[in-house]
Amino acid sequence: MVIIREVYPSLFKEISLKGVSIILGARQVGKTFLLKKLYSEAISMRLKSSYFNLELPEDLRLFNASDEDIYNFLLSAGRVIFIDEFHYIKNASKIFKMLYDSGRNIKIYASGSSSLEIHKHLKESLAGRRWVTKLRPLSYNEFLQKFKSNSNKKKAFDEYMVYGGLPGLIHISDASSKMRLLSEILESYIQKDIKSLIREENIRAFNSLLYLLAENQGSLISENSLSREVGLSTATINKHISLLENTYVCYPIYSYAKKLGNELKKSKKIYFYDLGIRNAILKDFKGYAFRDDKGVLAETFVFLQILSLIKQNMEIKFWRNKQGKEIDFIILKDRLPFIVEVKSSINSKQVPSVFYDFIKNYPETIGGMVVSEKFDGVEMINGKEIFFCRFENFLDKIKKKLKI
Image 1: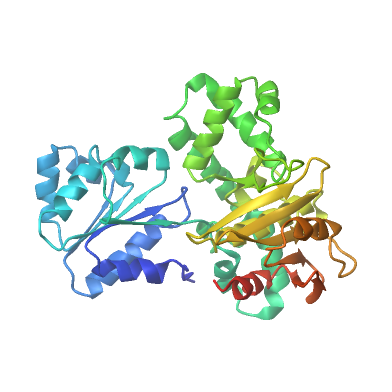
Image 2: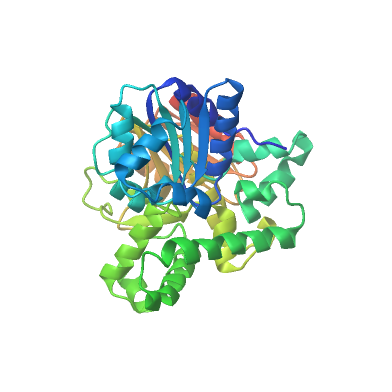
């Protein structure tokens, strides 16, 4: 079956916009699939089009030329040009700008998997000439397209929690093949992306860092502690974490602190971009019901779905004070907080006491939510609606409440 990606309609609309549409994301999240689908659409619209995958030697060879030769080559390549892994073009931004300024109505779709490389190659301004889409693994709603019956919702949830949402797993049914593919994707990331960016002697330490970050996902990160455990300097740890962020493998979230002296103001947490990849790092593919880290999996599940909603006027943060009271996620929309707590197990619709503390200090809070396996409903505290939602429907409730 074909999964319809939520970003596709907006990407397709961009086909009529002169300039460059850039799709960014980690390996195996479906960038090539989207480019090929857009290419097929362009062909069906009878638009002269060309497709190049620069990880293929025969295609890359075409771009092993001077900027002027590449410009002239692309100028005659078609009305719509598709370039997969475009950062292999030495002066991509300069050439794209030349094409834009040529007066021709040329559209370029380009993909890349490392923002380090992308920013390096797009250092020349393309303001007003480019649109950027960040592609992530399948959201849970996208993943559910695989399960046509509501009776399969529990099976879908369990599968997503263990194997994640990388599109390549959709057509694989047996567990061993899924585990093997996840391990191969992880190995490919280390061999292709990381080996080209860090020294050979640091690869083992980098792998150790990956494991520690996966094991401590959702916990406060201490670079000093990681430095001692991995055997690298704090500066190198920071560099490696930045590398993980810039290759879209990890997402950091920072603490929300506005006015209180007892709040943690400079701390952060890190979440991997996919549950299956995290489980592959830990080599733990037990079912969700049998996991000791159910709470971490549930929290990550909620984080990844919230991440799929974030717009330009929104942020995700967490809140924790020096006494250890914590709220998993603060969704900020136009700087107003909506608070979310995730409970892997809960016995009643009882509002967490920390919600009272937060709302007392931040009365502008829009409302809140407790996400769990069991309860739906709503409670009122200090004039704020606190929703209780199950994992499978919390996203719709947040979208409605925040008018996304």
